[in-house]
Image (cartoon, rainbow, N blue to C red):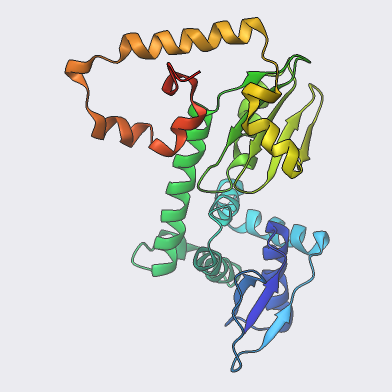
Length: 257
């Protein structure tokens, strides 16, 4: 049995609600994008209902607490159908009274769940460290990222608290959406193709302030001064600063401007 949902976390939570409502537990929650027609399997399209999703969230919190309930959300952001399936399996067991299953690391679903959490957490920390803002002439700060997983929702509080007195956008090119802080509230934004191109090619489209150029040069000089050739360990360096992040780090573009 396939439950096809809209790809949202609330949609996935509704899959759990419907499974208990219909008493169907041999279910694979999946999006239309990932679904491959199977003539031998039944298909049910799940409608996203915020009230049903909220009831599932409340039920999880009552059984396993707020932190582990958040872990289900973090694992969901791994964006992998096998992980969604593992999370679904574990949530069903929790609601059936077997919350101890989450500590059974011999269980394949628990291993998938834990591995997803570890990788999402690592990517979240990397985004906190590697996001670099540039400032446009109108005072808006922006940063472009392409994380492996959908971690933007997990870094909102960090950047809102750190840069609370200035407007900024962090834009995920891979998923084509961003988060915008206007010094009052957070809004999700989607740019069209021309706007995305403008962000990526900021040196030609966005006029940087003199102060921003000054700080960018400081990054260049800092990286140059700390990069001792005789002690260079590229393998270790790549482990901490993967190469896919380099194009968005000004300290890695020294001499390329």
